[in-house]
Image (cartoon, rainbow over all chains, first blue to last red):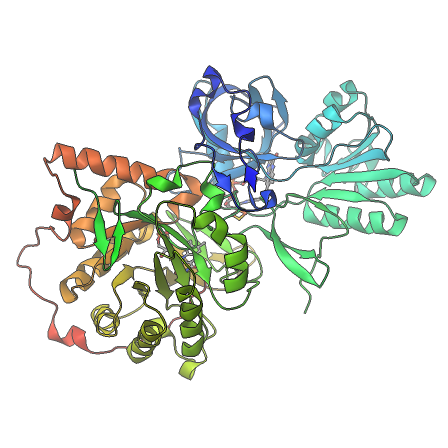
Length: 297
Length: 324
Ligand SMILES: Cc1cc2nc3c(=O)[nH]c(=O)nc-3n(C[C@H](O)[C@H](O)[C@H](O)COP(=O)(O)OP(=O)(O)OC[C@H]3O[C@@H](n4cnc5c(N)ncnc54)[C@H](O)[C@@H]3O)c2cc1C
Ligand SMILES: Cc1cc2nc3c(=O)[nH]c(=O)nc-3n(C[C@H](O)[C@H](O)[C@H](O)COP(=O)(O)O)c2cc1C
Ligand code: FES
């Protein structure tokens, strides 16, 4: 039995907008629960365009911010489109004091509506959600981060909180897809960019310089990756080829974000075979060795 | 102010529950709201064995609605009892267990298993399932099969039985009557409506399953009409559902003839909806000087209202393929 008092931690006036039910004795495994989530009405503190299609959104989220673990996400309700019902999931890029920020790309109706929101407006947020990255240990393997596009956002807190620095491989189609390079450098990480059109860094896919680096030296390293599925798959293949552990943050379509609708499932290897696990609850971060990229016949 | 209602033998402290498949097993929401304030907790559909469900994508957002083809993923009776029952049984409000099977025998077997479990509030029969063996038809859209399922479950358990009807029929009246005649204590109306969406760039359906069930605000007017039709045809109480997002939506269902309501898809984007419905319902009652929620049930003021047309009484099987 688990007594859920965790989320009462650090309660004060700032919790006024966060809603959480009274503690309950739950007769279930903690793994079945979205860990320390709250629902709160957040205020937009800042909202700026960082590149042609990326925006940086900063929210006052006192219930969520102190609880965030690297790799977790927030589920935002974008009210201005009532015909678009569902929340939208975004990795929590930074968490400072009582604020969180999100780095997002406009890709469709929800993100387009979000981009029009102004500081002072409110956004209902559920978070922090999901099972994030395990922090590298000071004497463990050297961390190598691999990011595609907004994958950098999912990896930032890991880079910030990791007791060890390492290399970040970041890829994109062109120069403007390479995000947060300066921020990662400022944390003391070595950043190696790659672009498909060669407009910045090495020309090619991000996994190409990664492979070269691993060929040079692979021992006692661990990969942490977030990006498009083909990239994650390539990272998983490299990890396997070099016998390295890897944690991957999978980008699945979501609906509830808290484990009830079973939209976001990923086929995962188990002792006896395989099962569907929820990217919003058991994930989005999975051990690369566990992920099945195709459903077994 | 009285908010309590009876679903046959089952008493609810207020008329608001949640729709099966949209609230997990309750425990997932325990951090966000006090489950003991609900009328009842209704859990995701359960059958005899664990079910993996459909490939992804399993849901797609459509205008003011949601398409889903989850494929009834679940832990099976034993998994449910082991993993979730210890939590659910300690709640002060009843748990309604949604069950399904691929054959009449399976339905009855699941009902029997839960009959032996201490503390179950009611069983809700989901009769719009895929993979049906009995004659290839669907329980929910074949009146005679529906009658046999309800009868078999009635024999298998003393628990209150709620039959959840499919909207995919020419008239809901014969289905409602068949369930009533075979001993169902209440009806749930409605399940999702068969629907489809296509990605025009890839030209592929937006669900891996091809087709799915439509839910959310866009189906509410359909559900209101179905509840209205059924309420005039049977004496057993009805749980109305389909697109409820607010107390106003819920009150519409009550006026159409529902005794209770269930919040479904809204739980996915606004997890506190069910509690807000309860609060809003009380405010509405105050504003209208009502002291008993039962005074709202079926009180729509229909011009020239009459009973259902005689032609609606015949069994009209329709085809459907819905998966949740
Ligand atoms: C765990 C997680 C973390 C994410 N973090 C970020 C981030 O930090 N920055 C960022 O820009 N984006 C992130 N995404 C992707 C982001 O959720 C989608 O870009 C967004 O939902 C698109 O919404 P839309 O209405 O603009 O697009 P539409 O295409 O109009 O959306 C239609 C539906 O598809 C879903 N959808 C569309 N694209 C995606 C996608 N790539 N992943 C998941 N669902 C999608 C939407 O949520 C919505 O339900 C993340 C996704 C997940 C699952
Ligand atoms: C993702 C999802 C899963 C569902 N699973 C079930 C189920 O297991 N059994 C069932 O009887 N109904 C299931 N339903 C149907 C709902 O219980 C409800 O009848 C329907 O969603 C209409 O209500 P709504 O519009 O408020 O969502 C499901 C609906 C959704 C959206
Ligand atoms: S998004 Fe609903 S279970 Fe993961």
